[in-house]
Length: 290
Image (cartoon, rainbow, N blue to C red; front, side, top):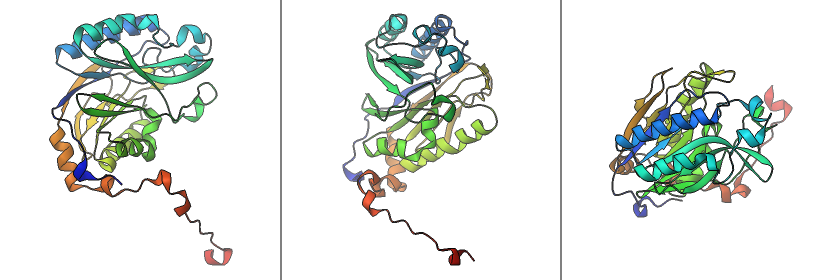
């Protein structure tokens, strides 16, 4: 159980840039150019970190990716990311780039994290695959927390946010922010995003950040609405439905303290990973259903 009295908090605010963008299907070079432009813009606005949508470098086009995995996926320290590494180093900004990746013959839906030093810090692979992704991509149960300016940022990709245990595990490990690269479409996708993210924020008294596509990507009509929620689950800032844009939000450590003092779900939660023997299943007899 988390001891809130001994919990550490960041000492200063964190300026987050959320990149909502239209991705050109299968065109990694053009999407890299666009990402470079948005990283520069975010840096000029003083952002410490910028996050892009899920599979931004290719668009959400698995049918294209499988035609030539070597062309449409990235590997560790891929030379095609060198311009972005240089821009991050020059502008002292961290970037989370959504892209398909390839490792040891396996394909993943990933977030590549480039630090402000221009070095690739880590690559997070999507934990929870949507049913249509399972025939192409592999899942990975390793969770990643990125530390920037004393802020612990837990990484997720789209469908991950629908599973409360994903963000809870990282919150129990000291996470202050749940930062998710996504593709949510109009209709049910929009509804999911508006239920999942405020819930994950309030459940864990953490900030929730979601970067979504705008416009069409593959067969999907994205709903935009990239947004940031505070640790009370309240919406702070939201992008438009269809436009490419960057929203900038300053995350305040005092809000974390305030939320965790008022709402103690995280402090009072059990670490269920270590208590499977406590689960008791009761089976109802047919006579009890009459």
